[in-house]
Amino acid sequence: MKKLLAVTGCPTGIAHTFMAAESLQQAAKAKDVSIKVETRGASGVENRITDEDLQEAHAVIICSDVDAEEERFHQLPIVRASLSEAIKNAQQVLDEALQKEPAEKMEKQAPPSTGSDRSKGQQNRIYKHLMNGVSFMIPLVVAGGLIIALSFAFGGIHGAEQEGSLAAGLMKIGAEGAFALMVPILAGYIAFSIADKAGLTPGLVGGMLASNLGAGFLGGIVAGFLAGYIAKGVKDYLPLPKSMEKLKPVLIIPLLGTLAVGLLMVFVVGTPVKALMDSLTAWLKSMGSGNAAVLGLILGAMMSFDMGGPINKAAYTFSVGLLESGIHGPMAATMAAGMVPPLALWLATLWARRKFTEEEREAGKAAGILGLSFITEGAIPFAAADPLRVIPSLVAGSAVTGGLAMMLDVTLRAPHGGVFVLPIPHAVGNVGGFVLALVAGVLISAILVTLLKRNVLNQEEKTDETA
Image: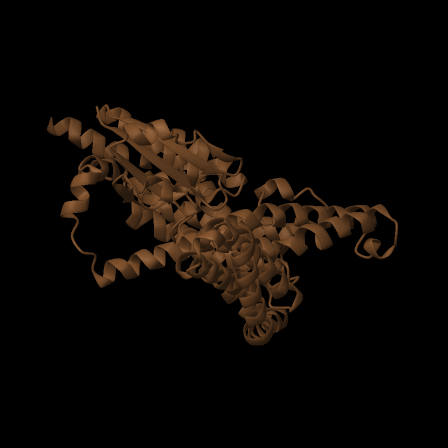
């Protein structure tokens, strides 16, 4: 029996990671194939692949938006698939892995890669590096945002100004502790994804400089990629005498990498990126309700378009990055819009039962819980089964929610948590507006799904009559 290995991981490490793993395991069980899936979720690496597993494996499937330590698999055929592919088309992904030739034959028969293949692979790697940084940044933003909200809860808006008070202490922890580390960690782990341990020091320093120079999360992203590729270049291409090779990881790469990135950030990159960040911040703060609604509409539509894919993550990362600059509106629009798809489908399965199979009605119950928790991925099974009707319906409702949230000046200090952050004082600004926007979007999407989907039971009855 052929044994397959797989690695799954998403930036937040909550839903996609484990949904993809479960889908691959179920597909393997149906094919009577042995598979071991390593998950890289919010709690770390689970079910780690061992050296013994590598020796027994026929091929490895990598479905990860974060660093998967791919160097471990250099002797195995590799199948790369997106997390959404693994969730929707696990059988097809498994078939591709099973059809792979053993590693020795692959080396002899592998066709030369085309320019388009190399370009696509590079784009995927850039996205993976960015998401690796985001995945390490998110816990800091969540903790910092909620602690700042607690500071307001204990001392009011100006409570942090009273030295020695609990409110002031909480503000120091959230703003000067967690939030201060946000950009350095983003940059450091982008660089880590590119150059492994060698990129971490220049990445962290570059990120700290970006933060101190006022270049914000955009500067952190630039610093991370600069640090990663510079460190990788020094590691791979700087020839040294054999006697000095051992100094490379502890002295040469940290020194040269940090020096190069630091000089570039201070004298070349920092000022223009700061100007860009300042312009973006000023524009967002000066927006009228009309322009704000348009931005919210766009962010909302992006959150539902691929439900956890690259477009969803682009909107989410943009909103999270603005929290450090004190811009909290886009985050509220993004989270509310991301809750719409699973909640709308749960509602649709309740009031239009004949439009859904028994399995879908059961999945609707789980989707409701996931939606309340801001896990958009709960809608994926429904979208995969009927994309042309379901996805446009969800995008419409999410766009309305995002637009309303921005127009009503709803703000959010914590980038995750769903309805469970609403009771925390000052975590959400204009709670009533948040709820109104969310309910409006859910109703619109649920109504559209109900109108557009065909009656499943009628189809089954027709099939029975034909038989």
